[in-house]
Image 1 (tube, one colour):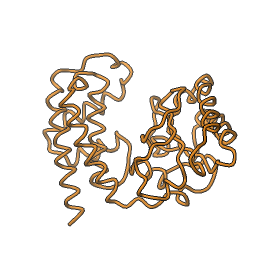
Image 2 (image 1 turned 30 degrees about the vertical axis):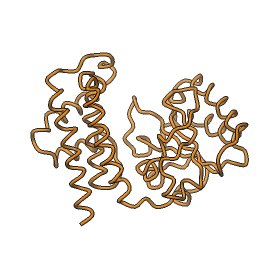
Image 3 (image 1 turned 60 degrees about the horizontal axis):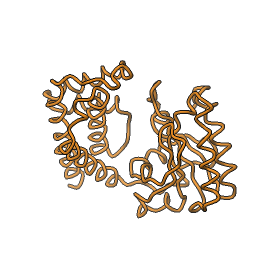
Length: 265
């Protein structure tokens, strides 16, 4: 896969720095997320993952902390890096899903322990679409992700999101978050049904052919909002979208469960 020149250039300091910090723990570095799926845009995170040979000791972790403390200063896409340092042994076992790895959030300078990238959908994406920046083919590193794993994970995520929004419905009224919840719900449904991962916009277009027509206006509005994403930061969402968004979020719980049952039969 040919990466845009500016993206490739921004990744070079991370790859070189991570390789130096990891030393004999180094296995490889990969681009995942929307760039790997071919659906990145100007607001995308640069999702990366480095594979390590074993858990990291304090000295190695300290070297990585120093690396990430300065990487955003390079500007450009380097300021939008997000990713984890995944233990090879974990990647080779489905029993270690959810184990925490050293992780840096989008644009952050801090390395923390997180399970953010140790999910079934993240492993599937790495194995099936990961772009090799340095190292072996990711299919030689990651155990096969059976269809049941991302389906079950998607159903659990659909339920958790719906319940969280019941406890705190504020995101429904936020012009940044409201369309994100719509598009993410579509992506969750896609994974629950197809057992694969795709971009939010592609999932929303796919969902339009499968959702009840009552949901089409809120999905179409969310797709249209992507062209004006930054204008909506700290803005109030259209109150008329709250009820349709909530209805979609809960209907995705039902449909994801239905997809899981149909796949079992």
